[in-house]
Length: 247
Image (cartoon, rainbow, N blue to C red; front, side, top):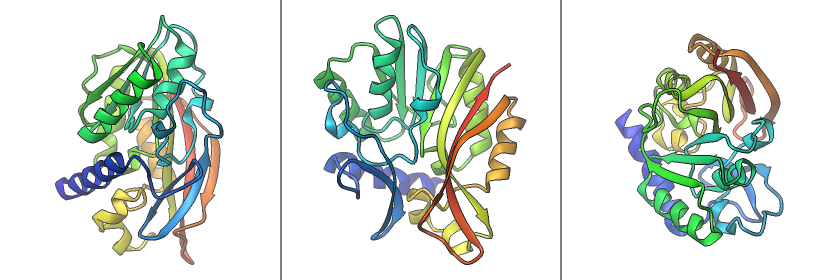
C-alpha cells in the first residue's frame, strides 16, 4: 500500500509542477506510458476558472450528476488543481462552501494559487488521505470525486469515510474507472499501472457492492462508457459515474 501511495504521489506531484498532464486540447485521460486514452472534455471553461485548473486527469464530469444547489457544503476527493471544486463553487454560491482534499502537497499549492487567481472565496483545499478525511462527521451535503477512488488502496475505508462525513440525506456523485473480466496480474500488481488509474480499478460489481455495504442506498450508475485502452481479449475497463445516498 505504501509503495502504491508513494508512486501515486510522485506521479501527480510531477503533473502539478508541470501544470499539465499527458493530454492536450483540454481532454482528460488516464493511461500508462505513451498509451493515453482521452476520456472526457470539459469544453470551454468559465472565465473565472483558470485554464490550468483542468490538468486532464478526470474520467467523467461528476458535477453534471451531483444535483448541486446554492448554499450547499460540497467535498471533492482528490481535488487536484481544483477544476471540479471551482465548477461546484460557482453553483453553491457565496452562501455555500466547497472543500477539496488531496494527498499531494504540490497539487494543494497549485489549487490554492488557482483559487486566488479566480477570485474564489468559498473554497478550501486541505491536505489529507481519502481513507482518513480531514473533515467532520455529518458535515457535507454532497461528495464529488473524479477518477480518484481507483487510486486508493483501501476502497472500503474510502467509502466508509464518505459515509461518515455526509449529512443524513446527503449524497455522492463519483466518476471512476472500474474493470470487467480477468485483468492480468502484471497490471494489478504494478504501482505504475495503479498511478495510471487501472491497476487499482475494481470489477464494477465489486465496486458497487462495496458502496452498498458501506450503507448507501439508491445507488445508480447514470453514465457508463468503455475505455479504449488498455483492452485485452478477456478484460477491459469502464468509466462510470455513480450516485448514492446516505439514509
